[in-house]
Length: 379
Ligand SMILES: *Cc1c(COP(=O)(O)O)cnc(C)c1O
Image 1 (cartoon, rainbow, N blue to C red):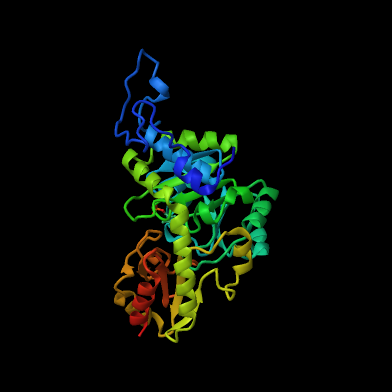
Image 2: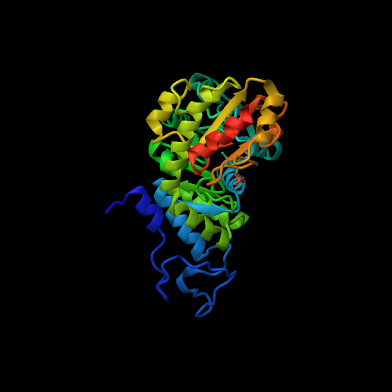
């Protein structure tokens, strides 16, 4: 029997515990496991880097809600990304990355992976001809973010999967901004889904983590080997917190979307705002592709301050309910200045973001209170 999204989020990997009947998977805060005889671990658990029941519960649930065969949970989103690069790429390989990728992803390619012999090109993924042109005989991977952080541009996952596969390259999708409730890249042809579970999956700004999800047997084998061999695993308590967050992902995302739709529409009417960037607005150049591949348009909004960079900073410093902080995807609303905060590392690169840009992570508070907070800050 196949189940719906919310049912999987609450039950996949989360049967009552066998010994006690505990309804919630316990936190197995242990590094090692007693063996019945030399070489006979019970249930296959030997050491918690290699396997831990709490992490397994999270991994099973993440695989189910992304529609993949296996998921692997890591210490952070970037730990997941690093593990994936080492698992599937070799020195000399070339990767296409989005020209407005998450700053940390860009830094991983430009400052870490490049020294190990990987080359990369930052390309506007909304332009498929440019992607084709940028591919070389060594291109082994197209790295997609959609919507991107912080400019919320939309790439067509199904089209890019076809382009990657024509050249026997992998299509990787960072699905952090959409979450599996809004978008399921594996079903659209992606080979690997990446998450910073720190964001919507955890959902409460209280835990850092990452995940990789795949369906191909060889990829699963390579990623699983490297998860253990490199050791950047998600700890039992972190896995437990993330799993607790995932249970409410569907209801949280619907409220994030309700609030963001109202706020985006409000911002389009403000003279202090020169441009509103939200994929749910018909004015957004990626609106049609977003409508095709996403259930709704998410909780992230970026906008440009009509008064320029100082005005953008003043707005960020003025809100009360919208907390000035990096990160996103929690129940509380956050505001930030990408140019000087999350994306400062892209300064001077092709990925540099506009200095008058403000990014909102719209939370699930009462929307009228959020609107009043913005109204006061824009004045
Ligand atoms: C936060 C983020 C990451 C990195 O995840 P960490 O958990 O901070 O390591 C990667 N991609 C996107 C889109 C993000 O927002």
